[in-house]
Image: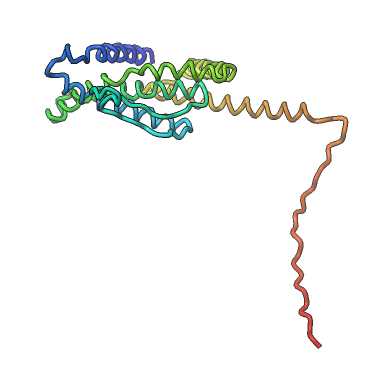
Length: 244
């Protein structure tokens, strides 16, 4: 897992550097071509946002991927997903998902590009796709701003979510330590933490409901036991009335 975090950091630095380099005066004749590569990276970025919104239970109001800036008509690929995260954890996941997806796609692209088993044309396409991903991998300014914004919506609940995440990580670490459990891919560690997080969340919710119900009950008064009927009333057809 530590190696993966190091790779994430390297991809983040490369992406931030690439964004600063992509300027018309620096690239010259290559600028239009690089812009088209960046457009692909932006599309992957925004669709990752959109998919993560659906994964955490939020239906986005829309998605926009633009080639030009509307006000100045300048060529500058950018996009946005119109959404309203309800909690801090949702905001963090939505913000970081494009970076995580892009990093894994960079892995796959590099694997194809440096493998002699693939067709040369496919290897070139994989290399160009890798550049596109790096150009659009890093979270944007609005992405980073959404994290503190969602935290301020409900600080107590945000701290509670952070506590559950840390507790889930500690539990997984203890389980891995004593069982010598190893996952083939690091993504399974994240899924295990997510599973532990949900288990703790619903367990604490259940305990809270039980305590609330017990505290609101008056034990001095005997509880009324209601018995439901186990049989349904028989249907008795009425005798037809005869007319005289």
